[in-house]
Length: 89
Image (cartoon, rainbow, N blue to C red):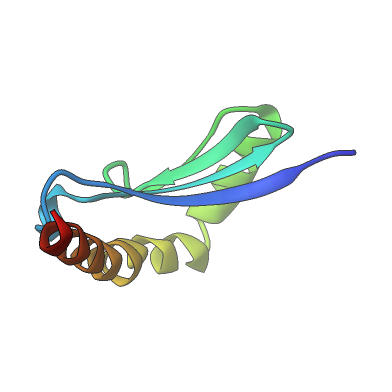
């Protein structure tokens, strides 16, 4: 069968919001075909389908909503993670 999945990730080396990068990627059969990075600020496609979808998403409301995910998703969870890790080490 075929496998399609999405991955949200936050890359950070401090709990400051400016140091956090939010990445949202779409995969199909282990091939990443489109991604959003908060440092780039828009969707980028890597395949023919990904490029078409990136263009569509960058011209619609989805790109505005996903830009806020860095603060909503990462900043909240990084604070919980770093607090938990630091209190147990």
